[in-house]
Length: 174
View 1 (cartoon, one colour):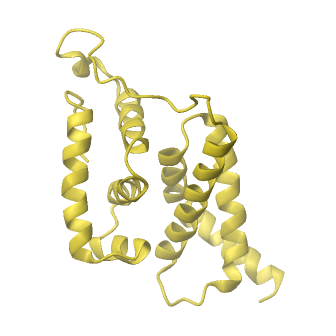
View 2 (spheres, rainbow, N blue to C red):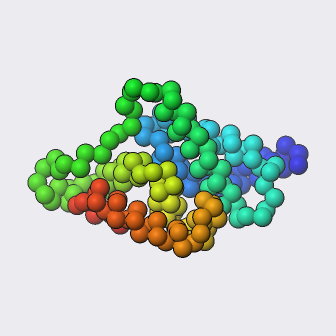
View 3 (tube, rainbow, N blue to C red):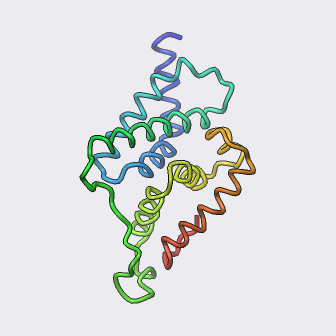
């Protein structure tokens, strides 16, 4: 594969799938600066992975796998670099106002709380939650993560309960 072919594939993938890459980035990095850094890492890894793509899997499956593996490696590296520092936004389950405070939350605030709660999940669970939000089928999720379709269903049910508990009162379905 020559550089022009690789560039054409990269541009097509970026145009078609930037949204799913950004969801993964936002689900794994809390601050805008960290999200920018991680997004650049994902793009670099995606570019590097193009020659290895044989077309055995769907493009979205391949892109998810590259993006998730990059994000997981990035998170491990970030943790090591920031030992002793608290950089991730923590979700405060205590209401800040009356019990109906979620009614006053704007959509961006609800989305921010959802992503904060997702970042607190174990890595596999966070990956499944993000893929579910992006509308992937159970089969596609199973292929990306290398688990059975049945296991995807079981895990998603547990994840929904965990997120519902963390986000009590926030009206946003997963």
